Image 1 (cartoon, rainbow, N blue to C red):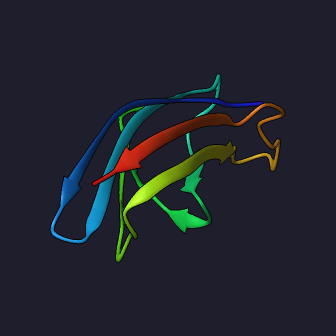
Image 2: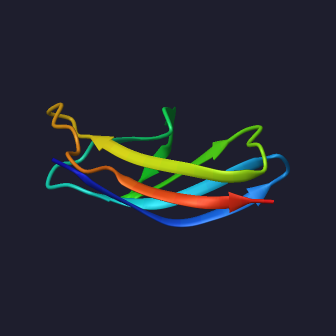
Length: 82
């Protein structure tokens, strides 16, 4: 199954832009962060989560490859939004 890694998080307006990488031995992986689909290109992905409230926010990035193999241990990260 594919593997995701969150590599960066930044605020943009009231939202969060989350970036990362996905690794798999076949092309065509899809990535979601907290259920929102990310844009994936060349193993890099990015998603904007709109209207994030201040405080601790748990981010969960997970991938599914073209053969429908789901990531077994999604990357989880908690960030503090101010």
